[in-house]
Length: 370
Image (tube, rainbow, N blue to C red):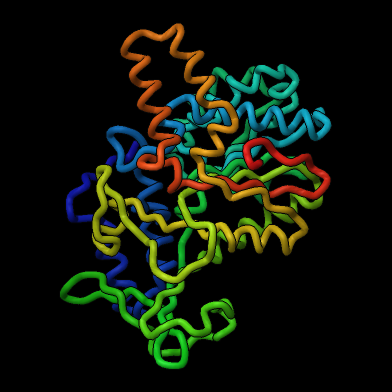
């Protein structure tokens, strides 16, 4: 497993600097894509970023309760949708595999669910894929089969339950700034002060900016993720054709708004986003109304978004926590309580994180949204 020291000599820095020197400033989206996904020096390609030693912790790593609730949610919807005897259970960006492991364990309440599930893990990082293979090896015998893919496009046709937990927030964003009568793209240049944002000298096609922001004030920033919306479009077309659901859990906002949300995290704290490319995690808030618009344009219906805390509470996380407490040691009980709190409390992930499900009209309403 490649390990790069998190000192200031991120090996990607001179490469990006040279690229900018040769061809001029790059878009924020290009910067983000290279910083996270460069094949040799990208943040996700070179390390396991998740957990206590990593830079951030995801919901499944906080508590097994999270994945268990998602497992019960999937099994319930599958059953109410007519229990298809074969379906794809797809996870986008499965991290260490913790969510899928917890999900499959909990979904065994309906023994036919895992038997019908063809698990498809969509992962581009070799480091994370190796961790997933190891963690999920015991579960492989409980499902129809389990395969890894680099994109959802290579998963065969057929009904699918697609799960995207903290996936869309890592996809590159473009940022546009209101200047005078028009908008210009925010670019990343390189100089004595390192990587710095600057404006493109060219106005952009006004059609890129939603009409609702026509009267934005000078200096306003509009942020959008064509990569995220493009992927959502692919998944939506597939679900509209073959059936079942896409569940998105991420931090973000319900309504499209102005302002930048790009941020960098290192060692569980925030750091400047344009320093040490490849050595820090970059994310941006997910615009749930933009996702819903794409899903609806492709024939799906949106349930939600609802706050993660509300969603998990409606699914019965309180009851599940109580059940686990009964047989837990004192130390385990404390971990269950803390985990439950962090997942559902407003000061934890409870309101910052949102949940939405996209499905056809003929699919029963998924649990947790009403």
